[in-house]
Image: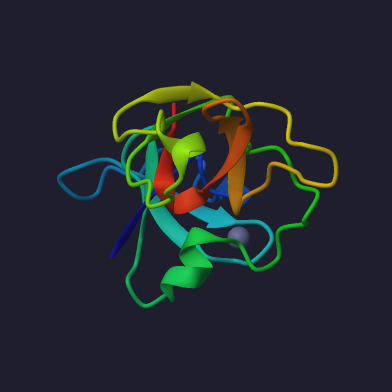
Length: 133
Ligand SMILES: [Zn+2]
């Protein structure tokens, strides 16, 4: 089972039920991705719970999302697991928050990661290293 933040994913989520399903203990909405068809359940507004039979790669990154799809690029991120090293990454400690910045020319912010201000220069963080806030 995977838990995916609604805002941090590049899936194009749509609700498939008209009214919230209240059958179980916890009401939920059936969600699906318009592009790749992956399905999940949304118990709250923050995340979608995805059945474990999907591969993690597919869950984390929509195989049909367009590269230019910038809808889900966060404005600000919190560092959760930064493995990069080097003096320019010194300020990216776990738990710290950073504004997403405009990438250097030739680079872009996309679902694989975003650029934030490191020490003295912008640096790229991978999607697994932060959570959108
Ligand atoms: Zn998708």
